[in-house]
Image 1 (cartoon, rainbow, N blue to C red):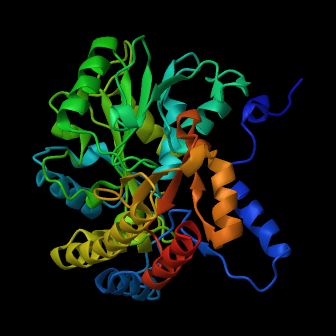
Image 2 (cartoon, rainbow, N blue to C red):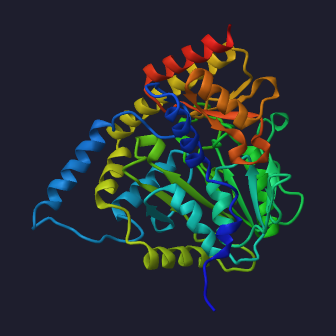
Length: 409
């Protein structure tokens, strides 16, 4: 007899960001008229770069004319955009084929959907702490087993613990795994893996015939040019890694929705042959996806132009300016902070050994400031909070003033 997918019942209590919203709404219900300032969810706030807006308006004009109207596009993405992305990677010394690029509506959905390529018995490793979608998509896919509330972990997942002792950089697994999720610059910790760090994972993956899913959505925030922007800067990574990226945080496209995934022809897992993963992902997208919006793809193409990229870097530098203000301000209050230099996120240690949610509640109640509890990203995130630089500068300054007023009494 048929029924529901009971793996949904294994998901740990409420998804992180809805829970933040629930608590914030509950606080406002008993404090009417108060204003909360959010430094929590990583949602961009500033206006889109002008040349990107123009490109999307021009595309709309074409769609408004019967002679230039277009409907469905290539599920793999507009060829011109894929070729432009291929060229974009050459500045990192990376050579790829445009047919290895797949345009999507964002890295988050791809991060979840990629698990469909792998058998249910694959052993999955995730950084701890990690962006929740890596874990939750595999819970629903049936690879994680039960959630152990006492330790805050799923019994079948392999957790690569990232602590301040390791500079929040994961170590390669000490056992065999089949799929490894890495994110650099990391969400939530802001840590960036070096080329030598990534080489260890590439060597491991090739040896174990594993595949790395590498999330590079924040790579444009890297200031230190000795650090890799793409895993394909590491020799051999095209044999074992799939890379995710997005226009969301580099171009302000969180609501416009546009990203891409790279599945190299040489990439394999287990005993699969080269080309199979690329073919499977192409088939998956053609079957379940009608392609990204042709309007957003026009904006993405503009973002890769010289003018567009300069405007996007101005946007990124605005948020990085916010990050510096936040890190300096929290440090002044006596907090121990990490990240915020090559990343839009500051990873702050809770004072007085407060738990993540307890400290969230203190900042909410005493300062009317919203942050993200670190434990929501995994058990190693306990006693930390993630502070986001995505916000209007005036709100960042106001939030820091509230925090300083309370903690510097």
